[in-house]
Length: 164
Image (cartoon, rainbow, N blue to C red):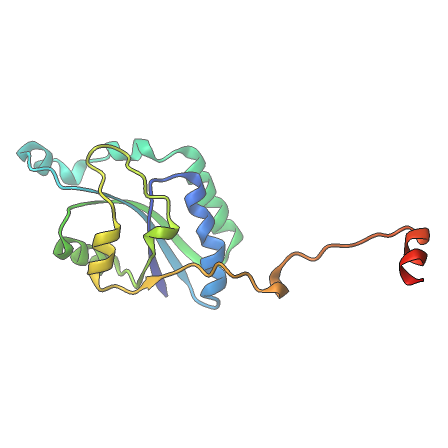
């Protein structure tokens, strides 16, 4: 079982990495965690209410949820797709999160849509790089054998011309 962390801004196109990851990791059960990272507030009220916080879910569109559901239905390898938020900005906090979530690999943030959701959003690249967790890259070279096959229909006159 592989658990892959995918940094995101919850753009529905963010889910498009899943088919390629499923092809790159065949025969394995996969869990995906789509995550957005926020710096931790230093206000006491925010810290006390952190565990009850759910206002960030307003940034996740119904289209994003629908795309996730479509991927789960399409690929039997997928056991779960989760949506989470990380609050913190230190490598230690991030490593603790990764360990508690059982993350095996992180999708390279350069393959992800990681724009800011608000002023507290942070760029995940530095934490990912320093975490020590293996980073997976999307294979952008599609083998020729996997390209869609096209039927070519020629009229009899055209075929005779080509064969002559």
